[in-house]
Image 1 (cartoon, rainbow, N blue to C red):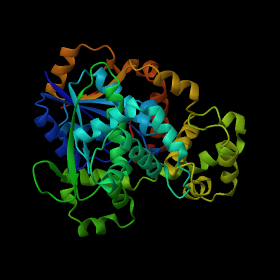
Image 2 (image 1 turned 90 degrees about the vertical axis):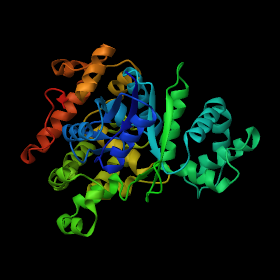
Image 3 (image 1 turned 90 degrees about the horizontal axis):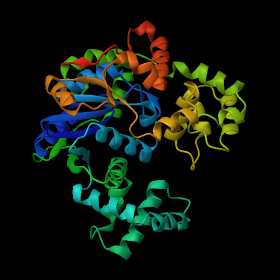
Length: 401
């Protein structure tokens, strides 16, 4: 059976994701669509807007055949490591190719730039550190370094402004990270890139009037019911998702702030630095600002500065909140063959699983506390926090469709 993989968060899933799965299966001539799905903690350093059970069910109803969990040590990562672990998961599932959507560029461009990075990483790093303009952010500085390197090894495009736009877009950066790690393997997966746009001009475009962040903001607002009437919401999500999204939107995921603040205030800097992502030097600032902050958002604003992004701070906060130690996270992350939990499958996906007979893909959830101890602990804490809502429940077995 031929297979195509997609690395996703589905936070929440919308029509664009569904169209990507449909297109990927067709263009890859695949029998099976495999999803490497982030669970209850996502890459931007937040608790997922909807729980992993809902995301898995939506995926299976929207074209996925097999859904695998991206463990927390894989999902709660900056772009480069997030991409590496996602590619590792797809490799464990033995997919033939992988796909993602992009507003800029095509497969050839991603492949070319990724090869450039892999072949000239040292030179690229030197060029990046030589740029002294303090007004530029990380993405802008990296784009300039790419351009300078391109002048020595050959152009990608004639229009340099287009290349800068491509290189500075978040989805392009993630796609480049995927392809960079893909190319480092002995047998790289075939890459398929679906062009995304806000309007539908052909079969190669995803019609996505709203992003996941747009949907989260909409459903988290106090007057979401009235706002939904003003937008073509059913162009973005299916009608059966509406009620569940509204219910999750009423859950305040910042209820953890008092506990995070208390933890920061009673923890010494040396101990704080044992948590994953808390690099040397920033711990005193995290503690000091916790004393001054009146809310989680206030704390993020106080801690944030040009060398530390908000997303990085949010990932630190999740590590501190859930006691994710560097030793635990790095040990599991360094083992690419570490087991992945099967979240759900269709009949076609089950057939594919039997064909693979891969021991690293775990369907027996009784083994989960031992194979995925971090995820087991975090999911239990999240379940306890939101027990009054009836949401964020543990999955007791894979979802079958």
